Amino acid sequence: MKFLIFPLAAIANSACSVIYDINQDRVAEYCNSLVDTAQRNACLQRNRTSYEEYERERQKLLGGAASK
Figure 1 (cartoon, rainbow, N blue to C red):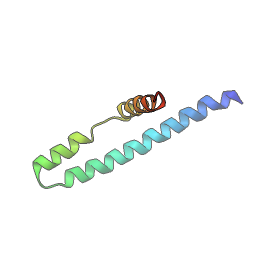
Figure 2 (figure 1 turned 120 degrees about the horizontal axis):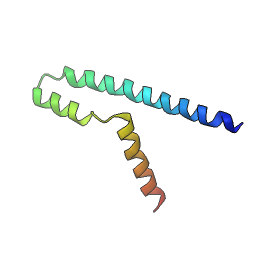
Figure 3 (figure 1 turned 135 degrees about the vertical axis):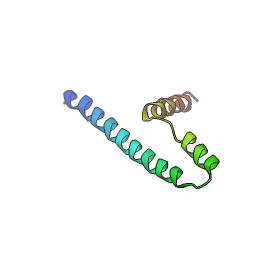
Figure 4 (figure 1 turned 135 degrees about the horizontal axis):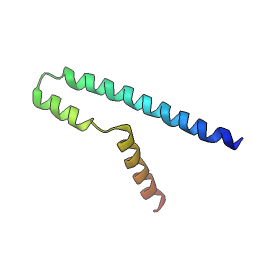
């Protein structure tokens, strides 16, 4: 049974990454649809976080919340 836990966790993490990437693509499409160059660049800049960076920040926040 414990041999199934790691593969299932890896699959779940991979699925989260795929969903995150799909959402990032949709946000980038929205950003690119903005006519104003400054707004478009600001939008793209706000949404450049990779899944790995997002997950690191999320874990940091969860660790901080758990220690309170």
